[in-house]
Image (cartoon, rainbow, N blue to C red):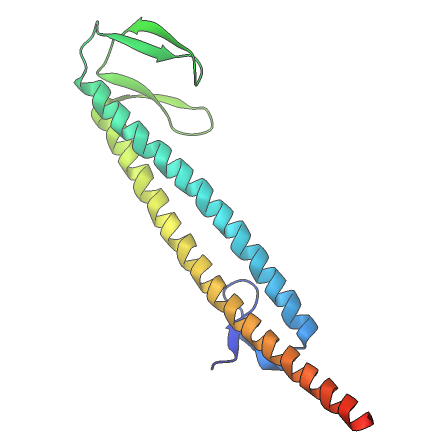
Length: 164
């Protein structure tokens, strides 16, 4: 119903928000905000990794089109480059994680990059859906909490008016 939302992680039964105290609702709200922030940060990290794999795919595809002996600038740091000459442009060392490098052809490297970007994109879509659901739940909790606080204020105002 309208007053139903999942509390905590997925898989738990729905909780009737109207049955919760304002203090409990505030705790649920803070938990949901924390989860949204954490998942949004993770989504940002996945986006950075995705972008790196896209760039790697483009670079390795371009490398496969180059000829041995061509002059290039080789980055030593993000702002320091030295002149170099291409040799062995048909293969490249690809970092497959945890510092392991595997020699691959340009085509294999491009395929690897494409697979990784597809996996990361799928993960990003799942996380984005979870974030959207958590934000929806957060809106419900916030709405119920505001209603309960307004009702408490009205009750207190009536009580004070009755004492005057």
